[in-house]
Image 1 (spheres, rainbow over the protein chains, first blue to last red):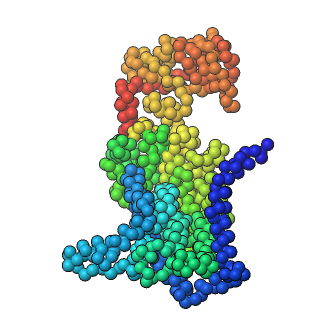
Image 2 (image 1 turned 180 degrees about the vertical axis):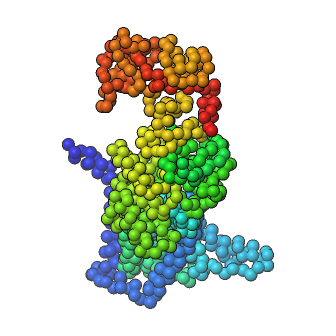
Image 3 (image 1 turned 90 degrees about the vertical axis):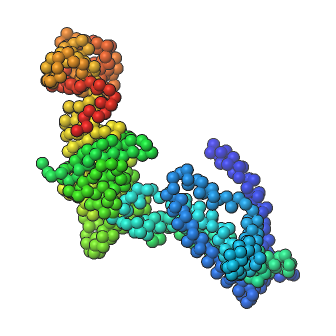
Length: 276
Length: 357
């Protein structure tokens, strides 16, 4: 009696199941196969351990460092913004949210290319600076440009989860804190911030992971001078045609992502509870 | 009489052009259990929020203990609020919740620990220090919210429909608990509710509000037995409100039948409203009543029967422990002191403003 509706529900999941097998599970298996074998097909850990090579390790550290900086900047920009959004009346709120989501609808490559045009040595910004007889900026092809690109592209992913977490806080909980004698700073530090931690954590994940794995931003805004781990992997696939090494390094990167996601899961579960 | 602790003077407040409170005047005495009672949208919660400092009135002043606190922020006021739906800090333990206000005031650890113990004992939740709010039932959470407020030793406790989310039985238990708490603490309680039974059970003074105006202020007995207008009579319990004529002092004509009553000073042959509580209608045999009627509905309510009796063209609501089956001819009578005479409102406006003293 009970079986029918259950199997029907399962049936509805079939398209996604097929999709995930074809485009997630099989490719993942292939990554692991290539990553753990050499050209002759024999098992080896060499491709994974290749991360320890100085040029690979350096790319990984730079990627970790820059994406961490970008994540922190995103958090510092997004939190006050999300708080302002929460305090706005509904009409204004949706307009401001729209302004922030609008860039997300435009192609990621286009947006990054636009920054390239803006930042170039003879680009728009330097032309304007030159017009006012100000010294030109040389940001392009530096880590600053990469961080700028990361922050610009991923900021909405930090704003939205924090905004969601903040808007879920009952205004009477804030009022209760004030009622018990807390000033604005104490209300924020003891109530608002701890209650918004689940949003902060998912915002960090949603910014940190794409920033860590990007190769487009570093390629367009970093020239070919600054290699992130994403660029190294990309080059192994496209230029060196060494799928084995590329896959091996991808596995290492995946480990970082998994660690991040496990941390997220742990904090999200306890986030409501005893984090602070 | 205790001295006046809070004085609200000419308070008006509107939201987006909608008048919520219009020139409200109210004083509250020390150690009083005062209830703001009224239907939703009557301005009772806004009045409480103005007292708590969460709203600023458009005009008027709030005097607390002789001091003007109209512009004072909530964290500087010597009163604490128990919110609707508890508003506990879900990321803190029960002990941390209760300690919140005391920690902000930089009290010593031993003082705070003593206070937590004392408060939990007071609300009958000893040993709950380490629990999280989410693991408690609604009634328990509400008691923690009360404990969290009273450890700060406020002069006044504001309660915003604190029992609204609880089921009937728990609500009744909590009513007795609140009365006990108030007597033990010896502080002023200002309580907001739309539940007339709750108001009658707990209050020293009831303030009946409607559409931003105070309709009547008085003790529960006075509000119930001597409602000043049709709104109060209708809102507090069931009642028969009948258009009548005051023939002379102590004599009223209701639906063509003359009844002796106790009210005086309404003039002669003046149109008035007579209010008769359903439990004050006496049913008997048709021969002995002042008025004859027929029972048209009968419902068993547990303590009493609820009947509708058609007499002289009016559907009388009657509560009686005696049962008269549908279709029975009965006699109706009312004792003189159970007839409450009210002026007829001249207009809708007067109905609202008339009693605002």
